[in-house]
Length: 398
Image 1 (tube, rainbow, N blue to C red):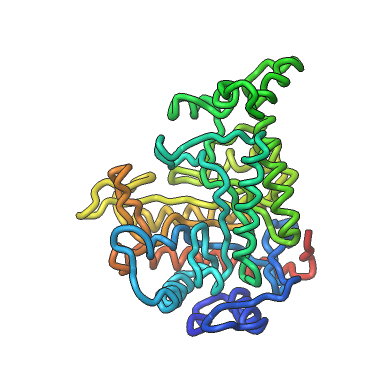
Image 2: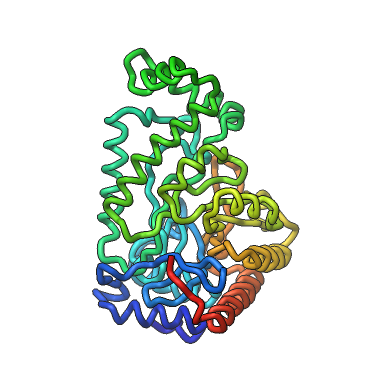
């Protein structure tokens, strides 16, 4: 690949090592079964360990698949398009394909694989959104089948970092009632007599259950047991990054039930500044490494004065904020990476706003922003590289 000269040494070694495993076609990598990303520590710092045994700090971009979807979708040779995207990403200091990385790009660089298991994602419309009866064996089997399908798609993929489950799940009872007019507990409670969830709720009440939060815990326990055990059964050596929680929409009881099955907590924060106190609390309470799995700030353009996320006054301001946020996140030894939302501009009809990327609708880069992104990414990766080289003898796998 032509882009390796732009990368810091550790990622350059990873690309070379992955290519050496077994190249199938143009840029597709076939892995040996035992070559996987793992968790590790370098002198007390949580990090990923890549298939070559080197520490890896993941910096990625989400929703790259939007290049090939919706109005303005790129048609034609996806292989060549993905090679072009790869060259752009790595020239800007990114080393990872985030949530929604299309093939063949997901086999060209380290990437995450999603599993779409439930329909309670925060972004879904009221017509699409639904809570399922997680106590129903039929529903459970359907989730297992989705997991089997998604894991099967990743066969032989040495660049797979790990699996995500549902994106932006809506768990918080009060927030759910405000936005949807109901919540997961109420939905189960209102099921018809004889439904598996209804039976489980009646048993909960008979056993002295007295709060919706307590039953929400049981819903989470049942869900995570089903999807956690199945994911581990089929992919015992692959990291699980769990559900991609929105900040402040994840009751503690829910995360506590996920902990036995996940390796890393995946959080989607908002705002301009890194919320140090929030992340410190999450790490102190749940004792898991944390991935900032989706974050974004935006700026108005002449064509799109309204944009999603926290809007700043200019492209330059977003670049400055990106650098500050990334460096503040890196200061935390439990942060294993950062993923930016998103790659390409797409107008969100439902929101009436632009979902802004780092490239415009026509694929041309926001030059000021990408220059700032490149500087920030390479700076953090260099700091990580120096830390790991200096402390290499203290590196251990978990």
